Image (cartoon, rainbow, N blue to C red; front, side, top):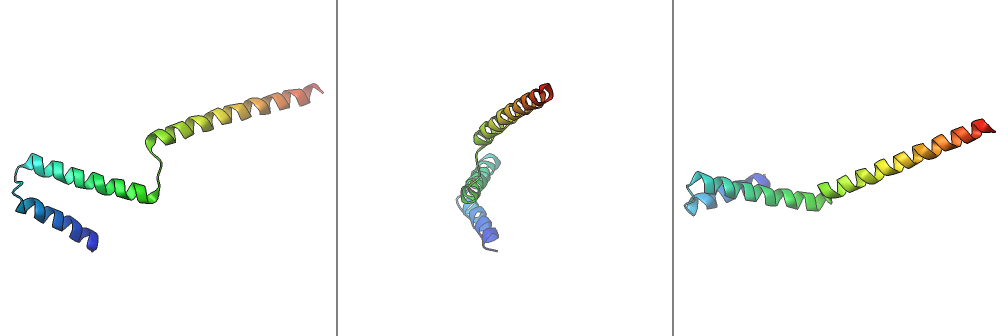
Length: 80
C-alpha cells in the first residue's frame, strides 16, 4: 500500500507543479522508475550486465580447459 501511495504522491506533485506537457511527464515517470529500479537492484546486490558477461566468459574458458584435460587423461589411459 505504501509503494502505491508513493507513486500517487509523485503523480500529484507533477500535476501540482504544472508539468502538463506529455514529454515532460513521461520523462519524469521514467526517471522515477529508473531510480526505483536502481534502489531495488542495489538492495538485492545483483551484478551488472558487464560483470555477468565476464563471469560467463571465465566459466566457458574453464569448461574448455576441463574438457581438454579429460580428453588427455582418456587417451593416456588407453595407451597404457
